[in-house]
Length: 415
Ligand SMILES: [Zn+2]
Ligand SMILES: [Zn+2]
Image: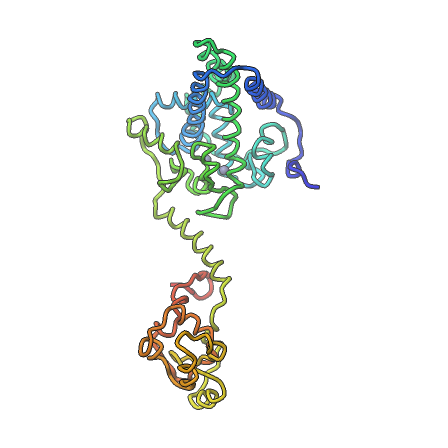
């Protein structure tokens, strides 16, 4: 029987510090939920502090420092850096290098959260266990030269202890709820923030659609966007990582994008990077065409013209005596299976066997629908020798547009 651990790499040890943080923190939160009375002021503060931590991760560690998708003034950098540190997910330097490695080596052995190792490994296994796997190399020289990133890397542990645990305990102590602060603003907030962020490495590579590229695992899903303040449009993000948006469409949920846009409006952020819409639309169209090609390939189409026998007028006349054959647009149609279903009645088919009904079909008697034209083309049994008609009469409406593949070294099918 397979288990969630089957795809894990060979484990060489346990990262005890991480285990302590990721086990003790939810235990403290659970203790608080059971034994500590809820103070609504602490609950509101915990929610606000959660937002501070998450925006520090999404707008700070991720979009600002990992991807340089915009510029932030120094006060905004301080705000985002402290928010990110309060989420207790490692220093910005550690976080950014790991994340760049994930983008550079997605779905390979060098991807620190390689999706082929399963949901459990990408969610938390890589944090808890030591293995031989090493993150692939990336250029992080800019982070190495950034004084704020380097200073907070050097003093990460005292900073994380203060902003992750002490401050969210001390502030509710102002209204005499230090235990509530410790259990809810610190421990419960951290537990939720941890697992919501981890969901980007696990769920966002597993659940959802691939509207821009389906070669790799990243996916777009509303659920992962809800959990991560808009980071769940992960297929888009892996295609266009330098874009300050994760959600491209206006109605998609990306509060981090809105936060950055508001910061720009207030003069705190600048140089917001966006990929050209033209290139984004190309990715989207490619996937739509791929889907349409699959639909097209699942449909039964009329015989190709070169598969039909060429029939002389004399043979057409002779054959039409024994079965109902109708000539339309230079094609001979055997309508015997269709006679009793013809909405215009049986007789106009039987009476006109052996005749050219092109003009009648296209409006002389009745201007037939696109569906009628498509259906009739399925009854083709031959092409009349010398029968030439304009393309709008010979090509059924369903075949005017079609999806074809370009081949480098053979004929170009689609111009
Ligand atoms: Zn990813
Ligand atoms: Zn990213």
